[in-house]
Length: 284
Picture 1 (cartoon, rainbow, N blue to C red):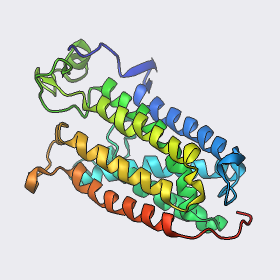
Picture 2 (picture 1 turned 180 degrees about the vertical axis):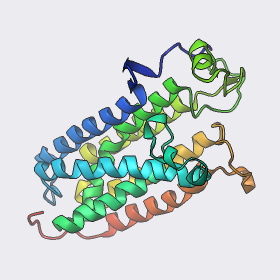
Picture 3 (picture 1 turned 135 degrees about the horizontal axis):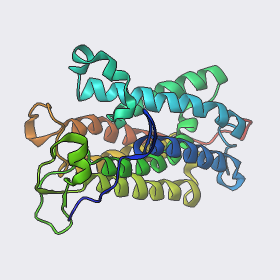
Picture 4 (picture 1 turned 120 degrees about the vertical axis):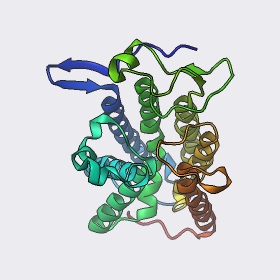
């Protein structure tokens, strides 16, 4: 299957360019903000407890989350996948627009942002996390689609009819050669968009609207951690390991190693939240 001719740059104005990758982050943050605010305003979702915080507080939190996503995602990519950049190209660490973001780094960044916000506003961290993670898959879906448009994070070679040759005139124009070669490869970006984006969103949508698990502290966050990690580990089996990564034992990849603690953490949060008794209903 040929790689579609889509310019990673949507429009440019002289030296300034608007890229699909940047739009995915902006769109994901704005749509996630709107969806999280909608959850907080939907009273029927909060049966045994009130909503964990107010829509106006969400308006303040979104800036913290955005900084955590971008800052944590970029630093995570550098530390986990390209640590040599710190001394070979220190200014490149700041060039987020060139791509290179780590989900696991973003999780750490957003967690630290939420800890700071909750401490400052005296909010329950686990319940705030339940709302934020319910909205996260929207941005992840858009981000993985942008990865596909950029022709990055491609999968391993495949003989399947759905394999994509990540080489076209646009790639040759940008790089002068085809980084992925001329073999058909798994479109692992689209696998992740489907599993970690669409399917994960539907699971969490069931948790918030069907099972109404927002009343149980940390359970939705636990479901997010568990299912994201399971989906990521599954896709890592067909995703090409990042360049420069060492050969880990047992066929593990960096993505798998970073996801394994999320499985344990997610199961713990689910177990803990389902056992915790409900308190008397009070103001958030």
